[in-house]
Length: 187
Image 1 (cartoon, rainbow, N blue to C red):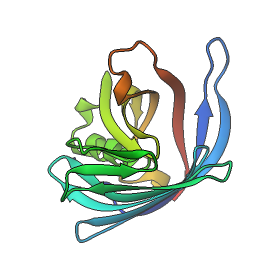
Image 2: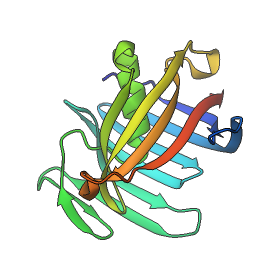
Image 3: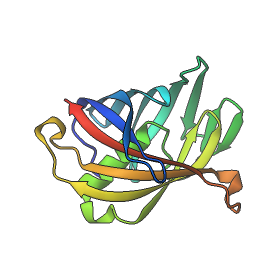
Image 4: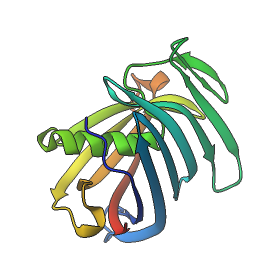
């Protein structure tokens, strides 16, 4: 994992539905600052506003806390307590899995994985994600890579299809599905 350089990026989320053409769903902004092994990340998009801060460990990004604000006005804080090996979230606590990400840092984790070794960004990637509702497994399938443009220099460009399931439903067949692509608009 090689974290991308600090940047502020505007992008458009593209939504696809079965049998329909891809269409822009909304615009969003990601602000990423990394210095001396620590990071601050702000993401303002269709899922709400996220502020994530933390560091790095052997598995990549290591979030310490995340503040989430939903588009409907709710707000939550999730703490990734590495000393006590647990995640504290709005509804309780859960064990802290190795490599766990929050809903914002998972984007940086994916970008860093693509920068470090682009060939690993094939097929399906599963990452444990913790947030206000607890932990779950997020699955990402790459739709392909594209060459970087000046607006996204140093960042991998790719399109993803993602699924998420609650960790407690690991043996169920119920997946939450969304198809999303990012297109960089400005640096």
